[in-house]
Each structure stands twice: as C-alpha cells, then as structure tokens.
Image 1 (tube, chains in turn yellow, blue):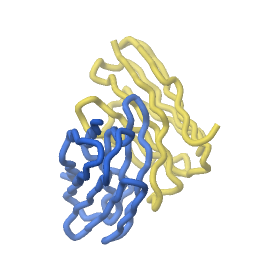
Image 2 (tube, rainbow over the protein chains, first blue to last red):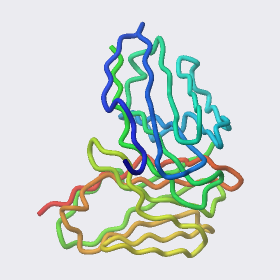
Image 3 (cartoon, chains in turn green, yellow):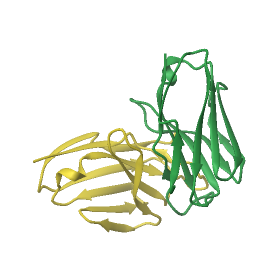
Image 4 (cartoon, rainbow over the protein chains, first blue to last red):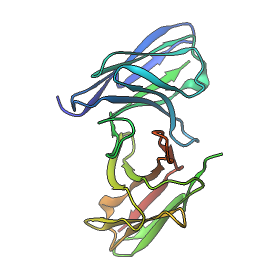
Length: 114
Length: 111
C-alpha cells in the first residue's frame, strides 16, 4: 500500500457506542494530523502529532481521543458522540513540523452518528 | 481571528473559458497550499507556494502568491470538464504548523 490509508471508510454508530478510526501512512513521515470536514464548515484541524507526541489539541471535545503508537499509525477513539459529530474525518501526514512540503491526505472516514 | 476567504464559493463555467479563483487571508504567512477535492474523495495536493511572488503551473492550472497583499490566485485556462471539483486554499501562518483552510470553491465546468 502507498500513501495514507484510513479504515473504515464508512461508519454508522449510535450515541452510546465506542469505535475507533485508524490511519496509517506509508510515506516515512514524522507528523500526522486529524481533520474534521463538515458539510457547512471549512476543514477543521483537530489534532497534530509529531514523532508520536501530541503537539496540538484544538479545543476538541473529550469524546474524541487520539492515539499515536508510532510514527506510522494514528487512531481516533470515539465515545458517546453526538449527531453533530457526523462528518468526514480526514487523516493527513507531512514530512516534519513545520512542513515545507504539502500534507498528504487519506481517503477519509465518513462517520454518521444516529 | 485568522481568516481564509475564497471567492467565488461556487463557479459554473463553460469549457474553453478562463477564470480565476481568489484566496485572501488575514495573517502573515509565506506558505500557501492549493488542494483539489472530488465528490466523496479526499484532498489532492495541487500546489505548494512558499515565497512571495511564487508562481507554479500544472496543465491548465496556475497558482500565484502575493504575501504583501495576502492573496493567492488559482487561474484556470481553457477549462475542461475534468477540472470540475472543489478547490481549497490553505494558509500556514508564520511560526505555526497549522493549516487554516478556506471554505472551498466548487467548480463546475459545463460542456
């Protein structure tokens, strides 16, 4: 596999469920990101990791919990979500922080919270 | 508050025509990125502009950056249907590694 992969691609969950989103990058990058893309808002940065350390938590509710076990993998753990959390969740990676190159995005997970 | 504003937000144009998408931003930055997103797909990197006066071209698309005016443009030459997509600009403020995205410009190229 190449680039940035995300699983699952689609997820439907109830408000009481717990689920996790997975992201893997095969680019040898040191920085990874979680973004939220809602229908009526610009892309929002949620979390940033550099060399497995979190460097940014952008006022995200605690029902979203990131985990970066190594520089290739990033998870987003979800629990007791709200319907307004339904969105496309995009993972991205870049060589370093700050980056002089672009961020490479995964295909996203389309999340629906019932 | 950091703002990145794109206009127009929606653009319908005929094949063969030229047009320009504008990206204004409110903070100092000399790093600006353009991305393309097809419906239901992820973001694809188009251009990385890293200095004042930077100009890059790829096929029918050309991007430029004026850091003094805090403005970037994405110019479309002789549009074709395959260019139909949503185009985002994103600014990386000085001394920051965050990308602040514009709302996107949805481009529809009609035959």
